[in-house]
Image (tube, rainbow, N blue to C red; front, side, top):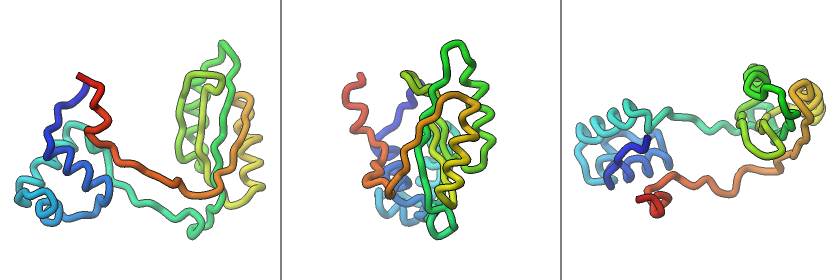
Length: 155
């Protein structure tokens, strides 16, 4: 169900997506609200589940995990991919998992310290289906924030 957000809520979301470490005072200055008003609005956005967390972006290379790959897993018809997805989620190197439509039922993003570990992950994931892998060569070039501009077609 879509939550109704006003322009101030969207401004708060924009600022927090760009820098979740902003103080309520700084947020208030940026959107022309008092700190208590910002605190209340952010709390309401959190309570509604619109803001679902705050995250640190980790430099994977600096922590010893320079390899990232996207692994596509084709699960044969009739097999239960939700059960397989639950098993895959337990693998520590898996940082994202998506159940999808199309020829690949499961797509995972993994990180690893070496190509050898990526290879063993590919072997480990073969129990879930037929895997194929693409190695990520660099950080994403864009990471757009979610804004109300995306809702222009919705009435």
